[in-house]
Length: 118
Image (cartoon, rainbow, N blue to C red):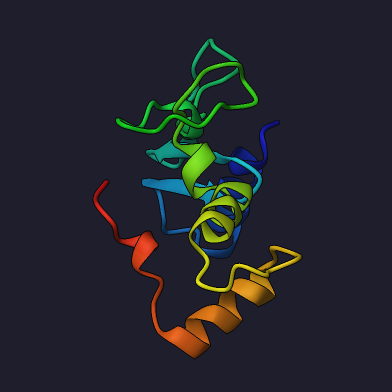
């Protein structure tokens, strides 16, 4: 079972009245699942919910799936840290981590590259 489907079942167990929702999970990748009428939406393809492999216009990053420009190369944990490293005002950053990203935002305000439309 895909992790997102398990998360959706967990959400339903904690909130039994939630009989219809979209769950999106950002982490190592970007995936999602849909619950309709209290049941997990099913699809014959084993890759249903793989939102991270949707092409993002203008994105030239290679993806682990073999394609170029997948959304997860921008908004997964790895993608966000790569963007931080590429756009960091602190060029001597030796290790790109969530802590370093949070420190830069604390020191310099919100990162402009997160909202850039390019």
